[in-house]
Length: 214
Image (cartoon, rainbow, N blue to C red; front, side):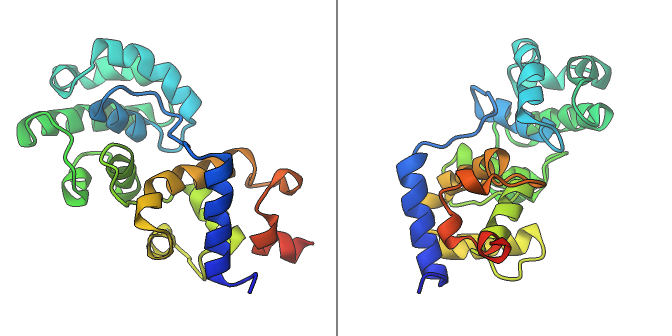
């Protein structure tokens, strides 16, 4: 059946493996620490803006040990053009100090430890686990939440956590890290929040939203 979940997931996997097999984060980074910082800065902010800010920030503070020595005011000067810069300067100061004191300056590889860092919630932790450590973790941001619900590959998922659990249950484990990027990029460039570009979308055959609208 074309509207069965199995068919939808098979179709989605085939489509993205053909059209975007090497999907990756649009955040620029050279280490686990740099990605962690970029992800914290990206909350309610565009990747484009974050990349503009981190270029100089990482030149000055490329490691947790270096950043831990900076004051919040010094960090603020580098990141003041992102959203909520005061809070984020506090988070960066706190997480870099905690990495140094509790984790030997290394980014931890498990959910609980990552979430103990200031500014790191479940979504951010999942990004680190999937992108850096290639674990089958699915970060659900607004794009992933919207696209999953519109396509109908999740059922009655009212929260990011419900969406995450359903996606992880249905996607092959080895595809979960890249599937996170497929859904984000699709939401960012095709399945837009206000006016989705359905005429450009290769997934209309399995899309509950398109079939309802049509």
